[in-house]
Length: 102
Picture 1 (cartoon, rainbow, N blue to C red):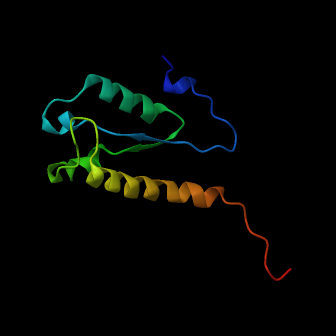
Picture 2 (cartoon, one colour):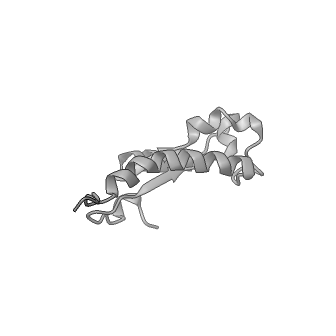
Picture 3 (cartoon, rainbow, N blue to C red):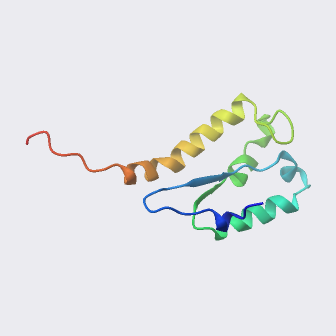
């Protein structure tokens, strides 16, 4: 087993780790492992997107097939949330473009 703190961080590389909660978490059955993973990720040096709270607001819309797997509605929501989280990282990583007037 590899702990998140053991994953090498290479200069110039940006990593976004996304935490996806289980459906049970929203119905009074939180998972101890999920809590431990969330805490480890929060302490890590990686950019971390916890989708627990955004999912709490939409879980009643039927975004899961089962306790873990998202349906197409859930996937569309994740795509939007992840794209929004990645946008600043991608913009910051783009090299400056030379002027066309040269």
